[in-house]
Amino acid sequence: MTLAPETTTLTVQLRPAGPDSTSDDWFAVCDLSVLTPGRGVAALLPDGRQVALFLDRAGRMYAIDNRDPFSGAAVLSRGLTGSHRGRPFVASPLLKQRFDLASGECLDDESVRVTTYEVRAR
Image 1 (cartoon, rainbow, N blue to C red):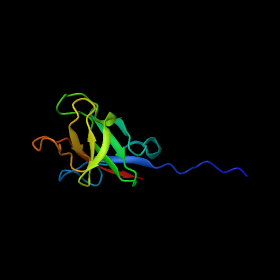
Image 2 (image 1 turned 90 degrees about the vertical axis):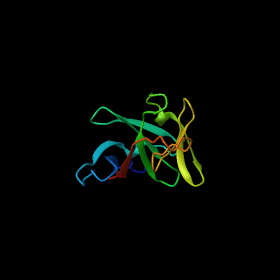
Image 3 (image 1 turned 180 degrees about the vertical axis):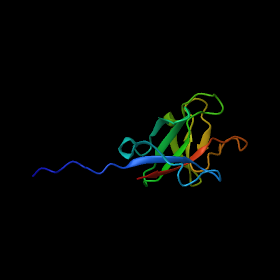
Image 4 (image 1 turned 60 degrees about the vertical axis):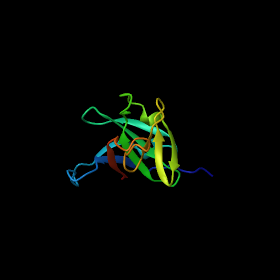
């Protein structure tokens, strides 16, 4: 028996979080099939910035700015993921600061944040 390949493709869409966002601000960044639980993927935004996308093992998606504010390098998509006190985070591969994937807050320095994005698959 031959099984037909999956024909439904879901696209990951983003929009900046916050009060300035409108329902029409969503834009497509990649296919959902590109995301692997526990690993990050970088995507280029229309304005030239980069976003780091993550999928956890429970199927929740997160999107944060890919630029590490401590080093200035676009590397957060290559960081290690984990959780601290129930908060999912990615640790920068360079200087190891941890960033909350839901809020963008640096868990090691409360005065530092990265931009977060709303994310959905459609």
